[in-house]
Image 1 (cartoon, rainbow, N blue to C red):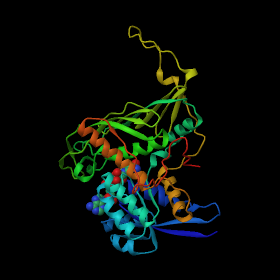
Image 2 (tube, helix red, strand yellow):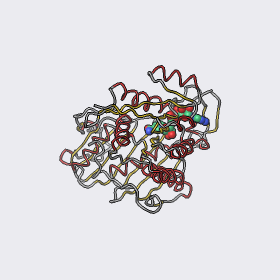
Image 3 (cartoon, rainbow, N blue to C red):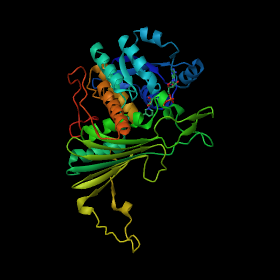
Image 4 (cartoon, helix red, strand yellow):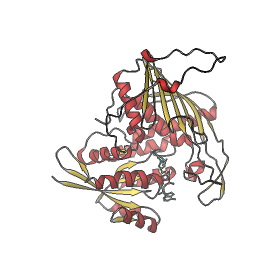
Length: 401
Ligand SMILES: NC(=O)c1ccc[n+]([C@@H]2O[C@H](COP(=O)([O-])OP(=O)(O)OC[C@H]3O[C@@H](n4cnc5c(N)ncnc54)[C@H](O)[C@@H]3O)[C@@H](O)[C@H]2O)c1
């Protein structure tokens, strides 16, 4: 058994996602479980160096999680050949510049979504990585949520018959920050800092739809900035210049129609922060982050419209829960493990920077649709005219096998 140590530059690791999902729940968890065990018994052991601006924060974070390396000097970390992966969870607007630098230094790239704030820039990153021959990946964590994995099992089994439509409800109330502290960083509500729910969430919707149901072909989107004034981390008021809700319709390859509401200005009256309802000729399903319930054609009750009598049905009782037959690990960690195997063992990893660019393409087109008040088509995205990564869809992709 050989231990293969992998030096990873983790930039933006003091942030919400960087600390919680990527450092604690992924890299530290992988180290604590004894690394990623390969089929031949070898072990891949990630060895992170925590990078940021604030020495004190980095030192504290490193000490808390028994990590020996931290630095405020990104350039020096990039020059060090021991570090072979560059990971980025900085605020979105800062990502492209740092990723460009890391590609130039010959590092493999793994980063948060969105990869950039415009499709041109995110496509440029994909092209640069491809030309440099470095391995690259983008976080597409929702694909690894237990609820979505259960939904995928239903799709693969043919449970739905022909899928007709999908309804996605995402969101919750994000406090304005005056009388209660906001639960998300303030840059998310400032367009000039890379914020906005369309840029943020459509990056997720693209890979969820492409991978589960079929490639997105066209869309119509109406955005809104419902709350115009918010309060930042210091309690200072600011103008919320970015969209905080988006009401979109997508048409997928094969004719499936998707309605997606995304909002940070909605109070939750559903079973989870994200619910996806799928209606098909043979059956329907509704999944949340962890659970998924179904109603087959043969079990579908017959409601009759009659407001003159009390409603005789409890509609929620008419669904059957999917069992949790598998043990589901944290989705961010699962994807990290796959990426590490991709880098060290050259195993397949399909969620690359081009897939990431498709997410930014969708948000760009949604913003265009909103601005021009019209439907827009989604052209195929390629690097330099050649199709680089094979487009996948739900029936073919087996991302956990
Ligand atoms: N995959 C997901 O589900 C998911 C969820 C939320 C956010 N995200 C993405 O993760 C990224 C980070 O989001 P977050 O919520 O953790 O944000 P955050 O504000 O909590 O963290 C941002 C990080 O960037 C660093 N940073 C900010 N400004 C900087 C500057 N001027 N110079 C150097 N470093 C700077 C901060 O120090 C911090 O480490 C965003 O791109 C966001 O879109 C992904």
